[in-house]
Image 1 (spheres, rainbow, N blue to C red):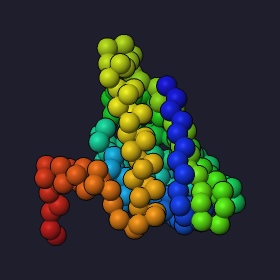
Image 2: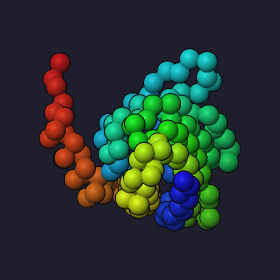
Image 3: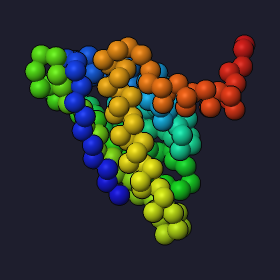
Length: 167
């Protein structure tokens, strides 16, 4: 399954790139589908990885390629919820003018056979909706410095079930 989406953002491309790549481990700051994220070291890779708790479950990622000049990066998941077998994603930022850019996401997911056969009618529309919401979350965060109401609601629900423990 492939999901490709693009959104226009009223911001310089470099500002968007800083959120997407320079703060790669902080997707939890803006994406309503990611409630917790952190950088992780990956052996035998020149790039980093990220561990996330998402609305789909625990996901671990490894960055495969980064092109800072063209503002694009690709990563694959090496740890996924059981309903998914494989996932790969590419983010790209396109400058359109001084203060306008486009951001695209190109996601490829292979579902496990049983979920694909029994639940793809439900999973695919939800994934598409989540990808669109993630782009909306990014645009709002970059343009305003604030989280969307969807992000706030998602975090409230997550942290109610998973309270942060004081050390």
